[in-house]
Length: 117
Image (cartoon, rainbow, N blue to C red; front, side):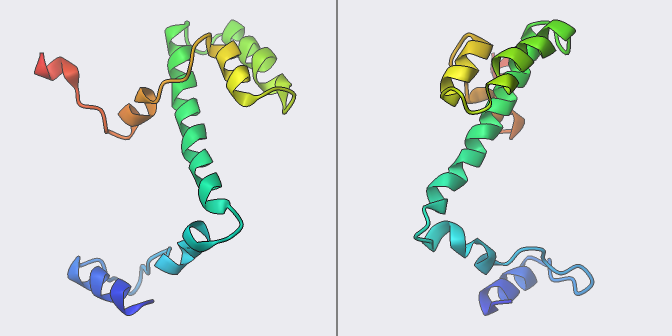
């Protein structure tokens, strides 16, 4: 553990010998200093998370977990497996562009507008 990490954990009262931290700062070095291009690819995780939350909203708005919705997902997304650009696949499924607001809401980053009205 680096001196910085040890000090930060101690100052926050999170230094517990029986439960050591799972990750260290150096574990993420490949993301930010690698010449492999991984740093740009890392953000694809956020993109897939956004599509996950957006598609959940589409399913809820269209009747939930029905056989018809499952078949639509199967035919328009799962069966395409690399045969089309993924943005086209998603738009064919949802019949609209994806919207980041569903992911932001799941992360608690959207202000509740109903309370403020």
